[in-house]
Length: 565
Image 1 (cartoon, rainbow, N blue to C red):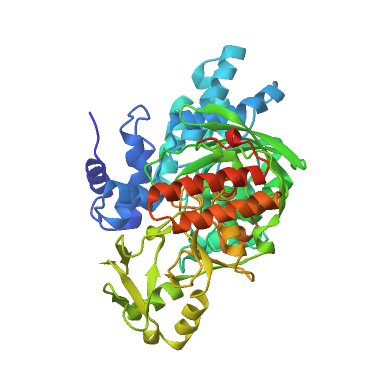
Image 2: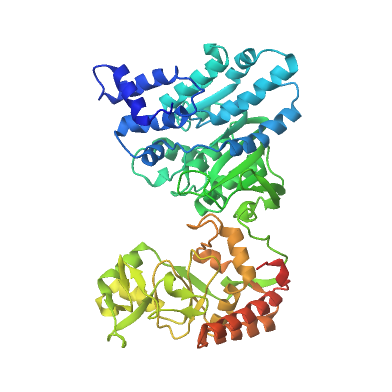
């Protein structure tokens, strides 16, 4: 019979006796009770991880309760994938040893139990001993840390059950903050695996002390938006013993986000990446896309080839080469998202050689609010059109033809009255009302738009690109409209946008994009982009953009077939 969370809570309240509203007593009672529950009841496991949040916060939706405790279960096939790329090769290299296995955020123990079953079966097959006897030996090798006393109690009881009731079998399971003084700092293991909690604790004002301290200990400039899972990963690489292996679920953003760059660099100094998995689908009941990274202990060579996998069950999808100096590891997941690898190309420099780029922020966005007006067919005196990413397509600005949503309101022809802005915002607006290329972010491909007249005021998060020589604006636009450059951008930024297949570049990253070797073809392509910008209908615009793209691929000496559709 299925057990509901509400029924389980009622059981705990009855067991707690006269003080059901005492949260600490309820948690203690639930932990004691969880240790005695049958591990064979599959309905109980998801309830155990939500129970802590439910007892602390009262009635909440199931999804909210899971989020409060980070209880998003790792699919068994993904658990097996991680063990296949950490535990399995370790056992092959050490046929006469048994490893210690650590999960620093163990929860109800999916990783540890799966590893334990493998190791116990190995003893059964080799020595012919009983499963229970095998677990009495294997249990103490499994080390689990978690802040949830109910989940750790459930896991300890499960291991004891498998070990025929021997309490010592669960001696490695502890209720402790892995990032605290008594957590990972006191640990070492041959195999470290897990699915650590996700989040951005470094930007929070409270409840993040251990995470902030742990981030500081990693060294470098760990950014305030560094994901908690990446902080776990960074600390775990120092826990792995010589010859050991590390494998963890991570948010996809860890591969390319600027704030996680110091952690990626530190990992390459102590571990060698061996395998990566990613999926364009959300495999967890959370609003985040994930990847898996597997490593062996020991510093990486100057260049290392990593095996890539996708989907569930995991399927191989080629390899990628990661270098110590690489700013991004996004190439580890691009194939999983359906993107081809970047072909060989020839370049002559970067956009930064001929242009400057600026990305605006929240202050500029909200600074426009007092001055926005709905304009008629004729622009109001002193007003200029304001555009957002939603009305920008390649070589096309749809202002006045498509509605724009700003500040929670739909506008048909929104304008900004410059005189209504404060002096600082007026100076900002004047600096944007110049000849430029506007580049939206969070798009599937780069979609540049020329504004040679400097008449459109770009709203966040449009990137503004200017050039000292006005004739170079169309050359910059042609570079950004090239399919090769969009592919390069996705290989550098994948995982940092809201969609796993979208591009999100900073202004500085735009300036690092390469320019082509063939100057004549580049200039011809720039002319085609100008024609696209001025085309009277979409069919003509598309034809010119296609010609521009073909010319630009030739300018980079790239075969069009290597880019894909």
